[in-house]
Length: 314
Ligand SMILES: [Zn+2]
Image (cartoon, rainbow, N blue to C red):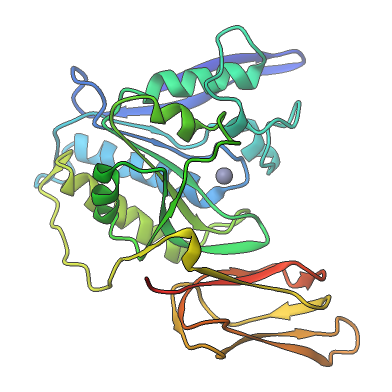
């Protein structure tokens, strides 16, 4: 069933609402809550979750007789609906970041009311998943991000079967994120970071779609899923495992490398060219042996810009 999480009116246009899919048995608390598009330009997550909603609705409609939803799943594909329309990360009217508005309130500004409604709908779920991307300039390997996790969350994170799990401490600064608000509640919370903003990267999206279906199977929400044996190892990375390369000179950075590949120390990963003369200014190499987990995709570099990140196996 699709309902509107929150309906809002606007001064000089028609009202708008934030769609929310509630799929599966209605009596229980949600087994899983999945949220995308807190940032309006992060289209990979919006695409993945809208496809997942379509798939689970088909399961409910009996199109996959071998599959059965035994717990309710709640999916909000795009929280920042207006930002999606205008291709902006923030809420278009006042440029606020919705992921800095939690826990929100019922009588605050629009983005505070949105944050409140999203938190109310999702906070009681056993598993809560928030999907993001990197910026429009940078591509990240599809990964699970843990923020100050419990031991149970560390174990569950492996069930996504994604190639990298990145653990960070819970930020003492960003206390107004949805993740920080979720943490107060029972249940487990995860961020998935998938690719780059501003585009749909089909390979990443298909991979994460399959990983979510498999996850729902492994945690007992979707029965009948054939769980494929992982053919790739899952790596666990802490903050100290990350080695970054920054631009020493401005120019045009070009690379044909893909995220998710293992690289050798000193391996060539791309070049910085003089933007107008075309001369090679600098060869960009891997700082250590490890997994290429992120790389710059916007070619124009200023000195000091982040070019890539390699994570060393711990
Ligand atoms: Zn985001």
